[in-house]
Length: 303
Image 1: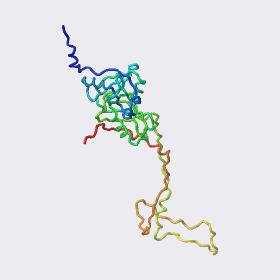
Image 2 (image 1 turned 135 degrees about the vertical axis):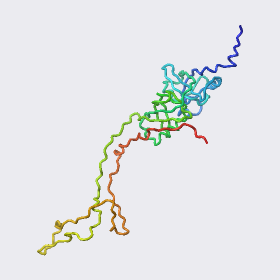
Image 3 (image 1 turned 90 degrees about the vertical axis):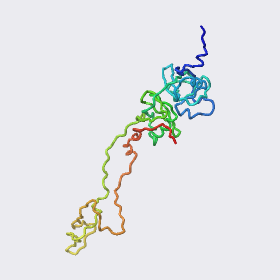
Image 4 (image 1 turned 90 degrees about the horizontal axis):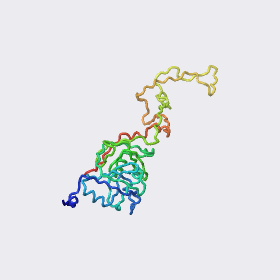
C-alpha cells in the first residue's frame, strides 16, 4: 500500500508545540554593539530558523517560552525580542542565566507556553538602597515594560540611574508564572533584605521659652501698693537692695483675647524656641511606608 509522505509537509500538525534545545550565551557574547535593551529586560534573542518553525505551528501570540535547565530541573519564562541569533544559539540576559545556573555554551530547553494575565505580584528588594528611590512605583512600571512575563522565585534585575537593583519575585497571581503584557497589575513590596524597623520614641513636650503672662500689657487703673518707698531717716537706699514693695499683679492671661492697647504701627512676633530636628529624630519615620500598596497599569496609552 502506497503512502504519500508529502501530505504531512503540506498540512503540518498544528497541535504540536515548539520544543527544542539550544546553546545558551549571555547578551555580552552577542556579536555587534552592546545590547542594553536585552540585558535590562526579560526577553531573549533566537535564531531565524525558530521563527520559521513557529510560523508553521499553531503558536499563540505574544510568543512566550519556558526555559529549562534539565541538569538541575530549574526553569523560568521569557518572551522573544528578535530572531537574529546564530543558528543553534540563543542569547539571554545575564540575570536569567544566573537564575538557571547556566554557563556560557550550556544546553537549555525551550518550549512555547501560554500563560495567564497577571493580576497581582509581590517583590522584595535585595538591598536597602532601593529605599533611596523617590518613586519606586513609577520606576518599576517603566522597567517592567521590557519584560514579557514573571516567574515566582526569580531574581530579576532593573537598572535605574546607572545602578542595578535586584528584586525577588515572591508571589504572582493567578499562577506561579504570568504574562505582564497589556495588563493591570497590583504590586506590593516586602521590606528589603537587611531592613530594620526604626524604634518609635515618644516625643517630649517642649517647654515654652516665654511666659505668655509676660506678654500682657501693664494693668490700667488703680493698683494697690504701687509706687516707691523711702526711708524715715532720709538716707538713700543702697543699690542692689531688694525692693520691699509688693509685686505688680498682672491680669491672668486668657488665650484668644486680643490686646486692644497695642500701639498702632508696631509689629510684634511672639515665638517659641524649638529644637532643630537631628538625624536621630528622623529615624522615627518609616521610610518603607511609601512602598506599601502600590499598583500600576502596563497597558500602552492610545492616542
